[in-house]
Image (tube, rainbow, N blue to C red; front, side):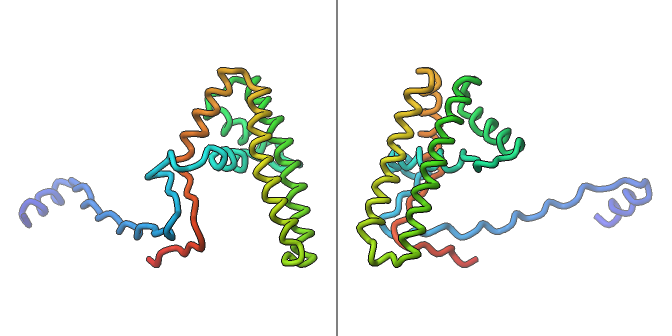
Amino acid sequence: MAAFATACLAQNVTLPPLPKSPPPAPPPKVYPAGSIEGAKTPDAIPDDKAYEVFFATRLVPANASAQDQQRQVQKLARAKLNAADIAAVQAVLEKFRSDRENLNAKRAAFVAAGASAHLNDLEALDQQFGGLIGTTRKALQAKLSPAGMAQLHQHVMAMKAHVTIINGPYKEPKQ
């Protein structure tokens, strides 16, 4: 072997680097009992939860830059929507953003005033937020073309594989 290496050096031949061993895999995530991992059981993720994740990950701020708006269009295009359906989704998302901000402002006011005194109000806000998801889904159905709604629904359902609903507190595993 040494003679071969010496011959290679003498002829100015470089050998390929030795393959590096792969880094150790991170420890698996262990979720509390009752959690739902969409990667394992996507059908166990409720449709409304998948739509909630879709809405939250496709929003842009009220004062969105042109770059933010372009990024939103690119994300929406992944659902294979046409330009008219993308514009319709953007309009529905804008309404969702505004309504969600109003609910969040009410929640912040209740918490600042002392959440325990307003527990019923906070529960009512949670119900309103759940209703907002349903209302937004209905708005999408009303504004998108039938083909666009079918494409969007298929896209959102595929997102379930990337959703985990954690039951209780979660702590990252130690590495």
